[in-house]
Amino acid sequence: MAQREPTIASILLELAEEYDRVVAEREIYERVLQRRPSQARDPFASIRARLRFGANEVGWVRLGDGALMPLRVALTGLRFRVTPGPHELATGLLLRTHLFPFVAPYQDDLTLKDAAGTLIPFRFDSIELVDDLFGPLAQSAIDISDWMRREGMFDGDTILVTIERVAPLTLRLYADHASLVRSADVLRQEQELIEGIAARVATSRSLPISAADVVLPVFARAAWRTTYAGRSWQELVANDPRLRLINGIFLSDRTYRALADILEDQDSGMWETHDSELLAAIDALQRELLESRREAAAQELWNGIAPRASTARVVFDTRSGETTVVQLEPINALQDYSDQIDERVRKGEYDHDAWSLTDDEDGLFAAADLDNDDLSIIDDLREFIAERPELLAAARQLIAELSPEEIERLHSTENIEEIQQILAARFHRMLPDNPHLFATLVPYVASGATSSDFNGGPPELEDGADDDEVSTLDEKWDENVEEWDEDLDAQLTPNDEALAVSHELMERFYAFLLAQGKSEATAASRTGDLWIYADFLASYYAQTLAEGNYATLDECLFFFYPRRVANSSPRGARELCTSLKQFYAFLRTERNIDDRFAREMWRRRDQVARVVDLYEQIDTDSPQFGRLFVRLFAPYTV
Image (tube, rainbow, N blue to C red; front, side):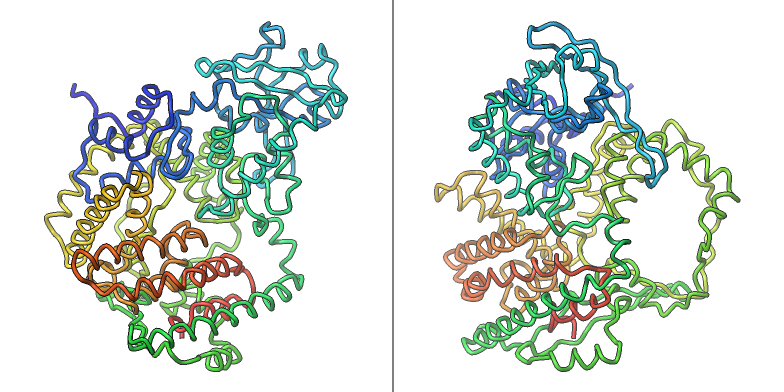
């Protein structure tokens, strides 16, 4: 039987055993490609995506600034504190979330020792929670009741944990009684820890985020990593007004609201004050944007006409099989449309459904002019499932297969897409051993209605969703990726050709930065930022980076980037503007290209960051969503 090609995950795990130091991400990318060559246009993309989130699952800690540290190096000798709750101290059951992210929730090969080095007998158990979305939920715990009784632990006492070995994972536990805690010795450590966590959450482009991607990097870089530990990171986060701790293992900023919060606030006037303040901030920003665009026109950097190609969407008629591209007309971006927008708001033309089509799935039906009668609606979900026992059995099997971490993620999210991703990933891994779960296919009969497809533009960039766990289907996918890419290369479109030319320019820019003495990490980061504008130009205008101009860059930064680029952030916006300025300065020396538009846009970098920040503050459940959305992204929404 032919030997299977190693996966990216398996190669990363092997490489993690070969290093005992911090290493540049690019070096790891290149070593992975040596073992698993790729003909993809961006061969680093799959590797970068695998390390972007959950790097600890493949043996690494992503430190930031293009650097990686082997997970075993970061964990060996690391010390942290656990604060058991009253119920845990009374029962001797310690929730496993206290050990996260240093110990994975699913890790069973665990050895515990006491202060003297004697093995601590324990068993895996659970603590049952009630009134949950799925009914009673058993949360994973470790029964160390004998050790707790022997140490005489009471309310207020904590546990100091030292990671002695990584393979097998060996933890040494020390009871630290409340009266003996050296709080004064750890004030600086606690401050550095919480500030490091807050900084990473603030700059993250995807929230909520796993603590593994936030806490581990802070500990890995800290000089106090192996010293007497301060309060637990969970306790510090819980007491910080900037942060939200979700189910003990996820982090978000203060704007995060769980589903329960939303339901409680549905009938309240909670949006009124927030939306009024938000609208005032948007109006102030729009005045600045209008002034900047007029100044740019006065400098003859553009004529003020916004082509708005990225507003296009593809509408598919299921009856005729034909597609139609619907796109807003070019507009004069030097005019103020506030009064026009307010008038249409008064007429009810900017309701939530009308604008959900731009950024939300619901718009697929809104744009197709479908009445409720055209759609098959499930009025009573319980009745629907009760009538289909095979569906109920499959659903129960799926829930039973979920790992504790997946269940935690389900309870922490209010995003239906993320819920679907979690369940779909688990279902995907179940299918090889449970082929009966495949649906029986029946011939598709097109309805008399029309529907829409708004995926005509480029895919979300740098999506963090990447499950590279080894399974039969994963390996089959890996084997075919390069073949599919070669097939696509044989059918290049003008958009593909434009993107290929941009990629060549980016490679030259990367080499230029290295020649200027920049580090590989800096060069890779600056070059990687260019993919956003390159993909935008190729997808919507069939243009290369060399053809960039003020009009398309304004559209990319102030309309496309905040909405369509996964994990956009204020800091990322500023970095993007800096990278573009440096790139076009490089093209000016190489091709004598006028780079004034990029320099002008760099001066507007704070404006781009504010658009991203304000967009994150718009609540999609707010009655004023449409108005806020249209005002923020004017003139592209007018």
